[in-house]
Length: 212
Image 1 (cartoon, rainbow, N blue to C red):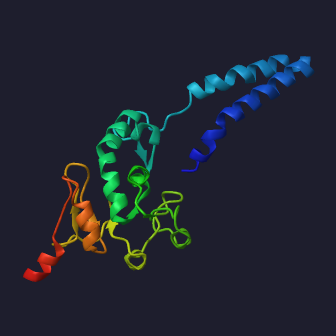
Image 2 (image 1 turned 90 degrees about the vertical axis):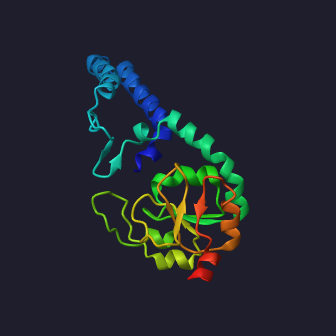
């Protein structure tokens, strides 16, 4: 989870390590063999690292994924090209969404006016302070009451799992893109704009109430 914060400075760590080893070689000639051994062992050990995901059909262990294999460049570019035409509708509608970490790329490309991440509390201090429900996944598994999301006037929930119970009127269909999202707070203006996207479908709530 937190290795992503380490990755940007990884090249600097390598440069620093090599400089220290070279300094050791130059200043302590009697330790040259040891220093050279360390210097050449680093890239070899990296190449021979134990891959806990090797052989798995899906690179996920105890709910922790190898994101480099899951979010491949080719697939992400394909998804980006598919959803970029939706961006203007998400921005114009001023839709407010809740999402889990795996849907963060949607937030990046669609740019809704408000997006609350509910699995770890990355975007919300209230959620960040709640207790963990799933103790297997470090930093994941917050228990978020729907009432809090309603208080924040969230319109759509973009989860893949843990969605509110399906009803006749709360499914938001995205065609072949994903499993149905859930409507949490209905807004006629928001729905009118989002449903301009050809693959999106949802119940006309006003008509539903008229026939209820």
